[in-house]
Length: 269
Ligand code: GLU
Image (cartoon, rainbow, N blue to C red; front, side):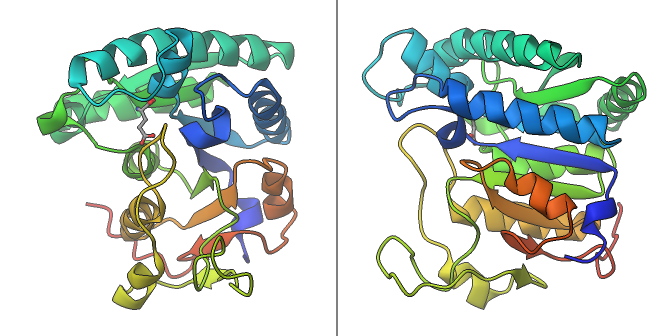
């Protein structure tokens, strides 16, 4: 994990399963802890961009639906309700630590257009200069299948590129990448370092994640490949223990690191 602890600009991505209970209600304990750790890291001099899922999941809870909807209009309605609630909570919790937040909602077509992409980059730069914590999500109410990023793991790698991050941390519902499924094999071992995402590594990844979010290990490996291609490393940590971020920046070996600061290809096209 050499060098990671000195990264100044960090994108942290948190998934729905780390923020909500399976019924969609927000885990107050978890989100409070996450915000506390991020606020403290910011106090230590780091610049934080948070990519937060949870809009649809929280919307499901707010609207009292029994499960995550599969049709687009209901998903978009849930996202509209949930995003509002999510930002209200983030704003309130970060304010307790005297930090300001900003909402940044992106769509795939924004970053395909150079002019709009530059605007987004400039906005991130200015927000960070102003000491604000940008909180990013996909603009789910206007993103339909053809134009969507698809999942926030991919989005977080793209956000990393847009804001020139030095590191991407994905908070997941698992400690890192294992050599076999830890839910089925008690002797499964975590892999601390993956220099690059090979076919062999992909074969270790299972299918989809929890019922309220999207993703799973496959989308995390895609994000790692993108991040390393853009020239910055990615680390998977367990979102149930956000304090693992302290360990990471204390130079301890936690989670799984993909790529490194030194061998990032830096192909910054
Ligand atoms: N944008 C979606 C939400 O906020 C999440 C997508 C994802 O988790 O990959 O619910």
